[in-house]
Every structure is written in C-alpha cells, then in structure tokens.
Image (tube, rainbow, N blue to C red; front, side, top):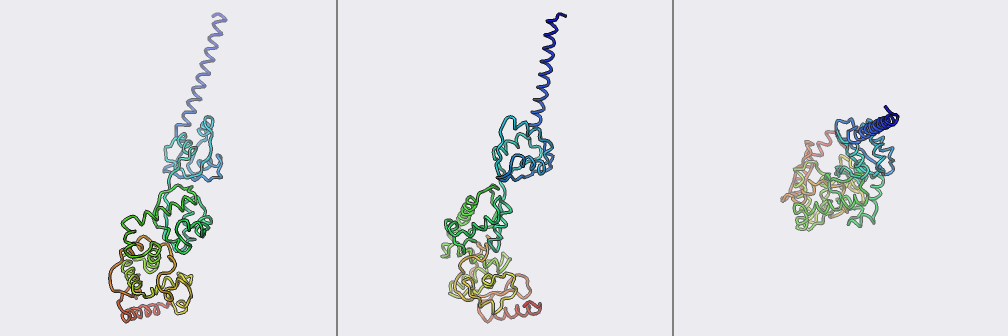
Length: 345
C-alpha cells in the first residue's frame, strides 16, 4: 500500500469515527429531548413564582415531577434561551422533556379551579382564595378594604360580600389582583342574568345587594336548603308589612359573636345598624357571603301567611312556623324549655 493510499484510508477512518461520534451525540441529544425523564404515576402540578430562577425551576422538576436527569434540559438550553414565566404547569406521565421545556419557556399554563366559598368574613374569603392563587391573603384582604377600588366594581365595604357568588371557576393561578376582581365582577353579572334572576329581582323590587343581604341572614338561620324558601317568605312578609325582621343572626353579627347559642336581652340592646330588633328593614349589607341556595330561596320564596318561626325543640335544625304571636310564643316556650334542659344559657 502506497503512502498516499495510507493517508487517504487514515483520513476516511478518522472521518468515520468523527461521524460516528457525532451520530452518537446527536442520538443522545435527541433521546434526552424526546424521551420522558419524569418518573411520576399521575399528572403533577408545579407552581412557578415570579422570583423563581431557572435553577429553582429545575429543582421543582426534580422534587415534584421526579426529573431523573437534567441532560435534556442542558441540551435544550444550547439551542434556546430560557426565561422563566410564573404560573401553574401540568406535567403528565410520559411527557417529553422538550414539550415541558417549551411549555415553561412560553408560559403555557394549566388552568386551575378556583372555589369561591360561602364564608362569614372577608378575612376568611381572603385566606381561602390565597390558598388557590398566587396572591397572598394580606394583599387580598387589603383589596377588600379598598373603598375606592370596590366602588369601581359597584360595591361598598358593607355590600362587598354580595360580590362573591359561591361557585367553582377556571382561572390561571398567577392571575393579578385587578384581573381577579374583574373576573369576580363578571361572574356576578353573569349569575344574575342566568335563570332570569335579574328579572325576578326586579319583580320583587329588590336590588341584588338587598337579596344577598336577606339570603345571608337565611343562611345563618338554617343549613336546611329545603326550608330556606319558607324562611325567605317569612322575612318578605315582614318587610311588606313594615315589621322589624327581628333576625337573631343579625344580632350575633352586631355583637361580633356567631357562636352565641342563645340571644339574651343584653344582646338585643346592642346599638348597631345590623340589629334588626332595633331597626326596620334590611341591615346595610350581607352578614356573610350568601350561598346560591339562599339567594334562590329569596327569589323563589314560598307564598304563605307565616310571620314567625322558631327553632324546633328537638334541635333537628328545622323550625316551627306561626301566623300569629300567640302561636309563636307557644313554640318559643317549648324551645326555651329545651335550651334550659340542656343547660344552654
């Protein structure tokens, strides 16, 4: 073999080795990008905060999505810069690294379910919502006290509980405060338009806030949804006749103690616009976030002649109803006797 031929063969061999090495590298890169490095059995959600760095996100993938190797991530970074985007991201079993990388790089989030609860205070509402979105409870609580901000939504500090319609909504986890408040406003508006609620409210000559205020009292009177339309009928009868509502839950609200088991004379003397034993009409606003069941109970209240109701003496959570004070006092005495027998003071 001539020297020239040896040089050619050597060059070809070297080229073959280089091509083979390149092929192996390319195959390794392709495999790391297009295979699944996540050892999870079910879809996992990861939450990226604005302050999180790329290293933080990789650690999230390792801790939550069981990322077995960062080789694919390192390869992806060779061809595309990575800028973190806050949000909630879903990673499913079998997801390819390249798909997850692109999802995180582009901010393609997974929507989350936001459950708006029926709670007694706006502090509890702030705490509940903060556990479901990126916003913290202090930010939400401050927004709920922002008179100018809630006025832009058509509410006052007293009527703000009527903004919240307890339901489940689909949102993005990193929703801004302004977007969240506007979303709640849109859902509120849509709620009243559904099932002709707005038209029924007009026929009752009541505003949405007034309906929610009465509904909030009914929610505190009973957890029995079947009985709520009858109780609503009692209160509407009283309002039409100009009688005070004399609703015990409003006294508890005025006192600031919903744990009261028994309303005493001293409680009835509390001076407050929420004390419906002292003041005619509805209180200034809801005493809690009203449930949809209670709102609909007001809109579809039973038509009857009852003007009074009292908890049953069997503590079943239901009530005895009466059309006159004599009958009501008889029911009340039975209940008071039951309270005494149980030592409830």
